[in-house]
Every structure is written in C-alpha cells, then in structure tokens.
Length: 298
Image 1 (cartoon, rainbow, N blue to C red):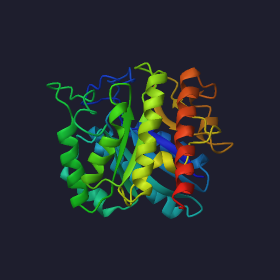
Image 2 (image 1 turned 90 degrees about the vertical axis):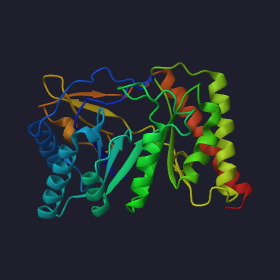
Image 3 (image 1 turned 45 degrees about the horizontal axis):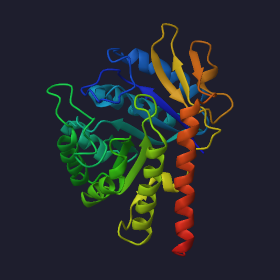
Image 4 (image 1 turned 30 degrees about the vertical axis):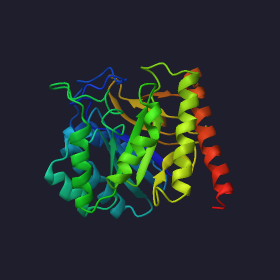
C-alpha cells in the first residue's frame, strides 16, 4: 500500500456547507510554504507514494497545484528510485477554470474528485457562500465538462441523518450522469448520528450493492465495496512551528516526514466513540456486499 500525503494549498473556501468542520477558513499559503513541505516530504518518502491536494477549496489555488505537480514530477524524474503513483484534487466541484481542465486532461496521473452529495435534495446542506445557493447544479455542469474532456470524474458523497434515506437515489442520479466512481462517507463531527441513521445507511448500501451486482449499475465502482480503510492507518496532521497546517500522512511507513523536527505533528491514533461507530457500520456495509457477491456467484 502506498503512503498517501496530503498537501494543503489554501484554507479559503467559496462555500458555506452547513456541516463543515473546518474552523480556519482564512489562512493563505505561499509557494515557499508548499515547496518547503514538499522538499521534506520527498526526502523522507518511500519509493512509491500518492499525493492529494486539499483545502479549503484547493482549486482557488490552481497555481500552487500545478507548480507542486510539476515540481514533484521533476524530482521523481531525476531521482528514479521514487515515484508518485497518482495525484488527486479533492474539490467541492464548483471551480474549474478551462486552463485547469485542459491541463488535467493532458496529465492523466491527476485525478479529479468532487465532493457533493447526490440529488439536489441530498445536496441541500452544501451551499455557496455568496447567495446561499445549493451547489448541485454547478457541480453537475462541471461533471459533464470533465467527462467531455475525457476525464473520469470521481464523486464523494457525505451522508448524514438528513440525506441518508436517499443514498441509492443519489447514486442512481450520479450514475445516470456518467459517474462510475463514487465514495460514500459519513459526517463525523458537526451532526449527531444515531441508531436510526446507521440502520438506514446499511439498508441503502445493501440496495446499492444489489443494484451493482444485478447489472443495474453496470461498471460502477463504490469505494466502500472495495474495502474498508485498515485500522492501522493513522492520520497525522503536520504543522509548522507557527501552527499552519501544511500537510497530512496516513502513517503507513515507519519513518517519514512526520519525524522531521521542523514540524508539530498530531497523530490521530486514539479514535473517539464516533469514529469507532462509523468504522463499524462501514465494515458491516462491506461485509454485506461480500455476502451479496456470494449470492450472485460473483
């Protein structure tokens, strides 16, 4: 398994999602901030690794994403013992300049991941900061632009008690619009989830599983059905001495950038009750899909 590094390029965001957990929405990053973290990351990185660009809304700083990608690729070209397997941009899907779209289309190692919650109803808590409009229509237009450019869109759905009952409907909605890679997550900090949520989550995911295996959603990949992130993964938040969040890692290698004394590192190796709760229902959904696979002789 590759180590995955997260590079933060901004804390600013153009949206005001009702369940957003971020408290810092103003910090600005310079190329010197980002390059310094990349230099230390590359020096300590294992032979193979992956990179994710994150914010805030990372597409507000497309310039830093492009510079980082080219910088890392040049490093790996001149140091062939190391390579980056893929780069992903986790965006809210509302910002997609044509320049960026053309660049992503020409550089196949860059993956486009949009975070949106499915149907316009399911997406009702994802609002634009200016005007408070539901972001659904903007994101769907950009998904189509991505597909037209020959790029496979990936969509991550955040579920919560107000949209958990429409998981299947949301996945059908995205599938009809050409999306074939979908992740399904659960809100963790800002909305309370309960037993009723968990029961409906498992019912909806079982319905999705049957639709995939029966051929109704032919060719659809649901991240959760491929496996549950191992408990051994320990998310590490990496900050400079002034407290600015520069990046993250998943603790998959024994010695990496988290060992650098320049940084303050917070290791999330003591999951709280909610994290255990969510892990348990995700595990159940995965196991339910495995049982369905045996029933369908897949």
